[in-house]
Image 1 (tube, helix red, strand yellow):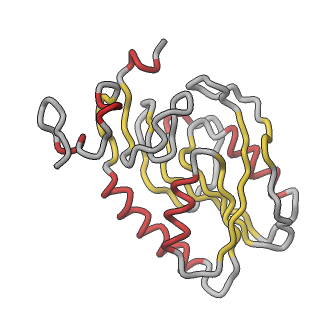
Image 2 (cartoon, helix red, strand yellow):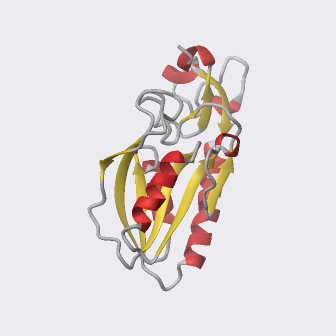
Length: 197
């Protein structure tokens, strides 16, 4: 039986002991993520019935969403990945986007679904959408597990949204702080002293 947090909160049960002192709260429990992915996959299946879909995962954060979504899909789908950066090791976007890894797949004439872990300012995703559309795909849509509308700097078309989150720094389920915490099954907030410098 997993240890409980000092206050007995069962939501801490899935958090490895090594991380518990850094976690302030469990924002989205793993069970809620699983249910939401079921819903999103069903909607993607309905929207792309009889079409071949190319899922483009944005590394590194989207790997968990990408893997768990793909296992739920019943439509024909292929996978590819891009790595783009506008953060470095900071907790806020620099607004300068760099492609660190491009697609291995030609996307002209294909239906593309960008898979994101979180959409924050939207600057990186805006750049990515424009870049991919310039390659003449049949369509480009976006699926994001999390979105932070309060931080948005550009208007973006996001076809599939898992959860809206407040303007707090979140980690877990692919989201990191300085390359740590990605493997947490829940989406959690960290104590300010952990990431605040």
